Length: 473
Image (cartoon, rainbow, N blue to C red):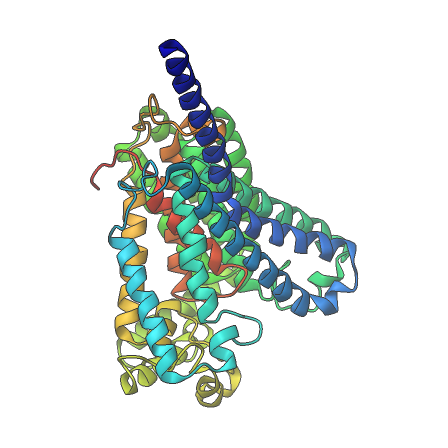
């Protein structure tokens, strides 16, 4: 009788562990769902643009509606993930203590608190809730970015499924690039026409540039830090996306990529393994050669760089501000004046749009400051913007401290960590941190838009979430 009880107890334990493993595997996959959904909606819009000529007129309404639907699905996935984890482990899920609130999480929680207080004080207008036309980012979206996209991406990194999301971003960018290159000589995609510059599925060329920044840096990271397969795929994707970024000609995006690649290459050549040093050196030589060739061959690039640098020097002497960043300096000055008038809680989400339209120069009538941190300071107050900056910097810094090859999966490997992520989870955390840094720099000159900003929070979560050994920088 005693033996039967022991056997029953053993079988019960086995059944319980098997159930936990199944739930663990499913929750690990769900943690990557928001990131993969963002890739899916982007690729879906590309497919619609290619197949349906009517998308040339419908894109500006269909894309936002599709985004709202996928946001709802992402929220549902988050709720299911939380239920699965609680059902499998109760309140003591593995990794929850080590992956508890850190400084980046606390910073973003404070940012979210200021968002809610500012919105309550300034009023729940339609623009505050849903965002203005084309950008479509309201207070609800910002909360979802932090709670769902960033929160679940932190768990995806710990669960071992972050690699699928990063690969999804790269291959989505490659598909868009291929469609753009094929459409240029034929004008075969109606939805790509009648836009300013090289825009692809996005509404403006600069927005395509933000997405390309992420794809370029992820691809470069795979080339430097990845194994043979990742290296080959990375260098091919890097070349394709870099070519498109040059054609895109968004100066802020080019500055962001140049700055991050410089840091990445120097870090790899100083602290990397021998193979990483060699790959970084080869990439650096290729980039310097390509840049020199561009400066020699492109008269337009030389002229634009010359006038931008000349205007920057003039601004330092308290003079001209007309050309700098195509009028961005004027927008920043106007926004800074608004912030000085309401520094604590700002004007609410999108609360300065109409003011900017009225006050900005006639040649540059826009409703955004074209600087995300500055916009958040105007929307929600200076303290909110400081918490936002602190959260971004701390998450990126945490990702850059990852030590490749340091993970010990001998005893605590989740079933979700088998497959591509098991090769070296530190790679994904470090690469995501570099890509987030690239987007952050480009955001200093850009606009938060519904189809690009979520990727930034996904990258921040991936950078901050992988629970492995760190090293100081």
